[in-house]
Length: 342
Image (cartoon, rainbow, N blue to C red; front, side, top):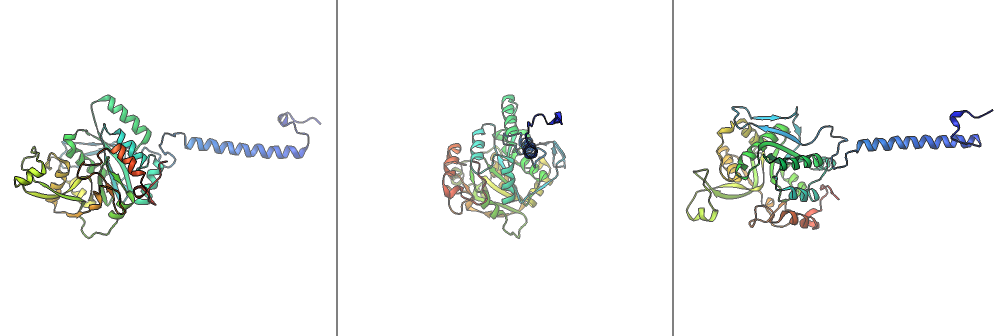
């Protein structure tokens, strides 16, 4: 009896061989389907982890400076507040693409899976925070970077050094609207950070709900927001000083940020320096100051949380190079919670 045409490609001589070949083909088909599934799940290999994240991680928010009693925040989507212990906003700018590359090669993961693992291990969510510019070329470069890495919080406010106090306020308002956190951390993109140690610091039990946490210094009180004083000169002239945190990194508890959100935007007094501005607001709120020297260490130690070239620079003096050099040191990078980017 002739063999059915549907089996003509097997060219089998014995029934037992036909059975074995059928099993092999079935297994190959299953493996092929599995491979196709893997390809579909990982089709975007540019660093964006889409298996668990159906929506982009980066979010654009609008901060309306002319708003009245509301917080002035409008998100570009229906966002539910994501629960984390702390949200860390890494302040960056259009000229800092190299710094962001250095961070993604060192202590900050460069993909969704790495960010998720770090969040699960430490309770900290990390995003780069940047405003906007009228320069279409710079905006296009930023758009491409967002597509590749998808780790930004985009503020609809001009990205200018002279407007850093406004950007900082916009950041805290946006972070509060998007994240349900115990703390909101402002960090610069030119410091070497140990997320695991920052997590342990923020996880400590505190009896004071209104907490302002940072590496504290004393700075001049300005009666005119346009005044700029060099600190030694201000001291010689007998200017009054008050305690405030160094700008590269500090944290505000949720109760403090909630108070900032509740106030009208035009009720804030803005000074030239962002850290002085925040310090003045904290003085008015009568918060509890926590002076943490581990947040301003000039080198990596067994207890350092943030490393930067204090007092020589307000950050690492050559961040793109120094960040990579520090990460080569075991005492800087070795941590059970840091996620390898290699």
